[in-house]
Image (cartoon, rainbow, N blue to C red):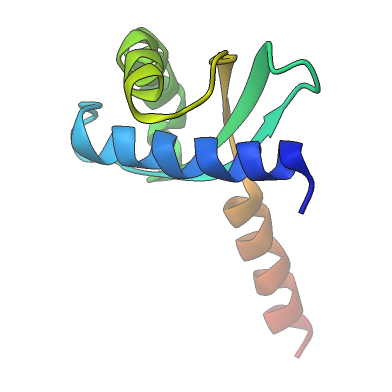
Length: 108
């Protein structure tokens, strides 16, 4: 496994744990689907799966307001010298998968 892939996986796990322990978003389930860091580790895209889908916009706003908590959590709980600037993105893969599954069921 390449170094950047290891860092992506480390950040994904640590960000997920930060959400589980300290990010307050009521009545919503958030899953960290993926993390992709830039090669220089200055930036990281963090894809979040949010259920229910209709609360994705407001949930992303709440998450972005609590970005400082996630950053400080990463600073304390990782061995990385540089913590990348996090960019949270809604991951709608599950929604697309459900649509494709419905189409397949209707064909059968």
